Length: 116
Length: 107
Image (tube, each protein chain N blue to C red):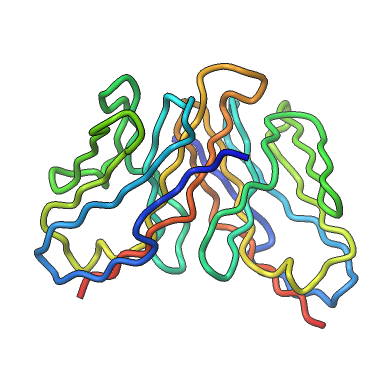
């Protein structure tokens, strides 16, 4: 069964460093998302991406964040200058365009980011 | 934005017991999903259920869209069912999650 994959599973970085989190969505999906979950809290929407552009973003997704689909398979989230409060689990998700359950989002296993 | 409330916030069960988790939402939705977050933090898709009833083994879910709630039933619970159960809804293609129900199943 196709699945969303994410790398790395864990990332430890120093405050102020840039990090890139990578995702490979399900191959025929066209909508891509990033969500984050601070430890002990609920999952929050960051950004959605469709047709090579951001379709929606939350207040959390400020100028320190950017997303890119550099090729036909990868979808990345970049944090330019990490802060302590960026420490969280980051989930990538994707969904298809058509079909009986086309609104269903499929989540990757997450990347746990720790900023020291 | 849409509000999602889950109850109860915490639940402790003996192995073999049944339970019902509830999700209330404040507006019409296109999508409702239930997830189980395992001890490693992974979100496991349980159900995509914007309306109606579905069953998968010991788990089943019902969404009454007109009354804006969904229920997740766990029967004959096992210790591996422990974790956090999240309900998430979308009205505009982005998912809004509830705060979850933390379930602990003791042997």
